[in-house]
View (cartoon, rainbow, N blue to C red):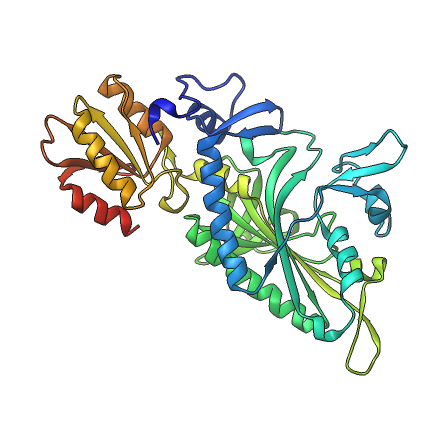
Length: 401
């Protein structure tokens, strides 16, 4: 990708009123644009990051046996009435009436929709266990949509749902999801802590959250010393001497929902003895746009973003300093070898180009100039040291990432 063609360009100043680091840096670096409070456009760089996050999550969901689909965002009131959440979730759900006086809700989650689907299509214990997932937009009427892209009124999320004949099987899969989530977040470059929490509007059972430590986080968690496990402040009852208090950002959660939803919607299957039994149900979420914001909150410096390699918009940021022919040759070689590279081929000064590279935060900066001769200056974004390498060595290193 040529920098001259990239939309939009970077900004020198943070937007007015921005407090969160992710808000300041993602806007300045050209990853997101705010339409209204809690409503964001993912610009080309931002979409590349979220797409990489999505692909990592998709690979791990598929590997554990989940099937991807896509469910509607506009839901009839009748489905939500079955569980009583049309009324109990009024504060968070956007509800509207169309020109024919029919009432609808915009999806803030999909438990009712999934259970309605299962009621239609599952009939026997032989159909279970089953796990499905999708990536979709969620709408939540946040009273205070601040914190940049971390707390939106409209955001992207992966939500998965598992269906089972017994509670034992549900909890086996619940634990399986927990372990897969740990693998996903490790691949995303995030160090997460698993905390017990309440179920909120989803369930009266204890649930688990996946938290990233950050001073800017809205959650307060208590982590047992020497471990990566603990409790959300809202349910913590332990001895504070044994736990450390941290601020954190929730990036995922899992819920053992039991039979609460299947009972209300009457979603049942026949067991081996021919008896009708309620489906045991679990729900599992990862906020993909929230992951992008969290990554910036925990990985940045005074110059800009420092992206984890796995979700960076490009693998390398190539800068030409009065050496366009040599840079073009290297750019073509990188592209031919399947390396995602952003090439700043503009005629701006070195200082301006380097500042943009640091702000955007691509993991590797490559500089070609008269001083580098037939080599390339290689500098990792998270390092102050630069070194000269040959073109083939640069390609080899980038391909090994």
